[in-house]
Length: 143
Image (cartoon, rainbow, N blue to C red; front, side):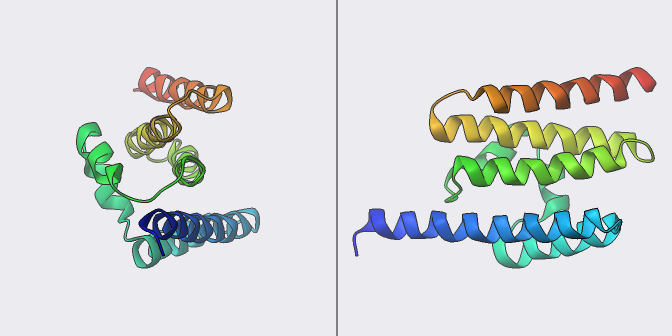
């Protein structure tokens, strides 16, 4: 099997794992179990994707981008991860505004990585980034 086919299989496998993770997260969230949703999702991220949510939050932007540089994530997978970060950031904005800002910044970074993967800008991703940037500004104004 050519290397390109192996890489494509890895990308598809990662996308499927992220899709299942987000589906489970949204199911628990919609049942009003946000804390459980975050716990289960972060365990899944660690076990299936080798992504430590808390460690990712501690990385500065260049280190964050470097962490994902050689990983087989499609733009779609990065967008799904960003949606998870967005949901957690939005949830934490009232009680933990500092954490919320950091999480929302990483969600924006994930969308920027998706743009890089596709070598294009997406109007949908731009709108998501603007929404998150607005939330971050609001949190800063409240400080």
